[in-house]
Length: 249
Image (cartoon, rainbow, N blue to C red; front, side, top):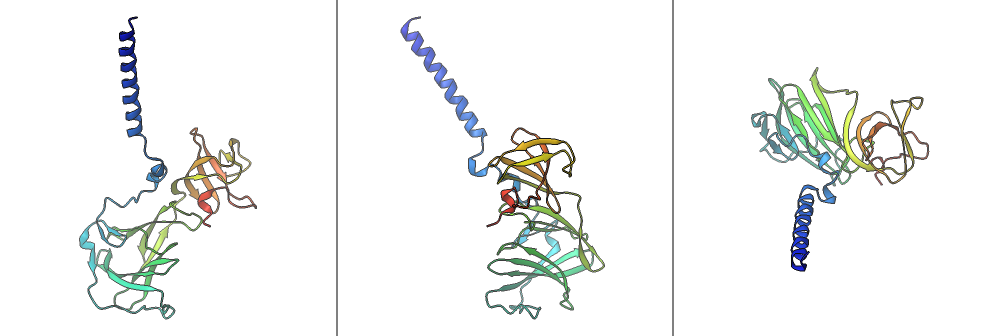
């Protein structure tokens, strides 16, 4: 082959490879987003009215425009605590409640109170200094997307509540969707069901990145490995948890 033709052919190959690499780079999410996109706020498609409160329709919420209020509970007199009345929410047809936010350096809560008596109807408690997303439908159902006590970091679950007998009562789900990437802190075993007597699906090694798909109280996680294998991790090791998302310190 003539040297010039060889050089031209080589240049064509390099251009094709460069274009292919560019396409792959565009399709691949940046490292800092891998695993983060799994924990997106599921209420983002609904109107956000104040703080992290979402509603099916904006008419369900009325913003509070009165003067600063004092905490209604006698134990809420800490100077470092911020207590605000945000407004009123229609929790069910014909039923309105005050919505009040309380924040402290290490915790926060969103409280629903009877506007006539001040009686606490429900408190959403959060493991951090800001309130996390809560969705109100106006039909007696509310959803909370927040960190569960055993979970840390960006791992969160959606909880469902029903307005029954003047209170918000949590609807217990068989499984809670976690969908969070995490790291194994020690060797672990995946089983085909929620018992160590069931067949072993895979043996995992310390340091492996896995996805915690679902959680069942108190210590059972449905795990997916990088190869796509799925099974139950029974996180009951006396030495401590096997997953980074349960180690908050």
